[in-house]
Length: 403
Ligand code: PGA
Ligand code: ZN
Image (cartoon, rainbow, N blue to C red; front, side, top):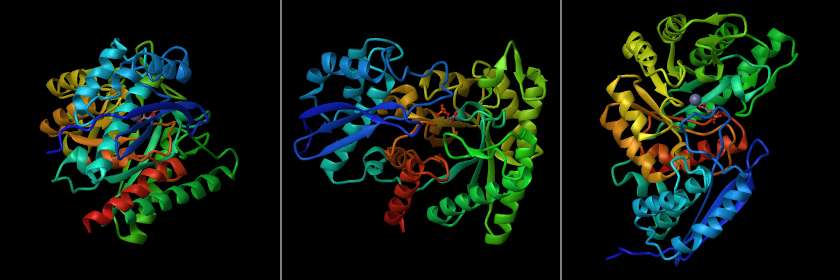
């Protein structure tokens, strides 16, 4: 029986991400297979997520790997993913992976799983998800953006759409049509002046949040009628980013905590946004719970920065009924094993799962596989742009396995 495949070699390098910054990539060689993984980076990072890089950046991360991990990982049994991930954490020796960097830990962890999947001659989603994984997520892509992802956009970080088509391909394609239509509507409204694109290829313009709501409503209605398909709307407030001195600071007004709770709930209850992420700053678990209660089954309140894919934080959120959904980003927690632990907790609690990209992405497609492995309701990974399409097009390929 196959129970031991030692790691033959591991190499680490710098590669360039979609923002033009360096990130890290790892290659794991087994006897007859290889896995490569590069990690993305966030801009609106949660306070409790792993530190992406040590203080000295990607170079320092690689140095630490060469000196303290490489020789100890070579020879380790690649089939023992949990053991490998525990060893990576031990060798780093810090709570937030601040010596090795969460991005390097992620790259090694996922590259190892990819190498094993290739050795077993099965797709990564099947290796991680097991024999029963066969549901595909729906694509959730941002069409208008602001916050930390652009200079002149809306206060709310992301306005999103998710076409509920019969196939993944149809849904992903129609999301791009909505994106295009929104570009036209924005150009008409602003006569082409200062319409740009943000880090994740969503349109950015000097409009306020409620103007963005009107535009996204119009575009989804048009495309939905034309193609006779349901198109869900979503938002990611990324509320921590504009929370200061106990208040929420929008372009033209300041909201108290109670006003923010009502405003956030109204996005789902009155404006019809099904997906509603990080509507409250990330330390206020009770505030989240109030929004979740007000919204009930009308939509899903999704926790990103509040949980940072951390099982301990999620446990607290489950106890306090803070959210009905969770965003999953591997490099927030640093290893595949910890990510799986969080996903299991969320699944057992009946929470909706969304596997997500980061604003600074690479062309790696591993999150496409994880979205299937985790039975995610959505994959949030933009609508256009090569680094986003790497994931969407991989899901188009995976879909062929299930047809
Ligand atoms: P980030 O943002 O990748 O910049 O952290 C994405 C998000 O908040 O969902
Ligand atoms: Zn978010």
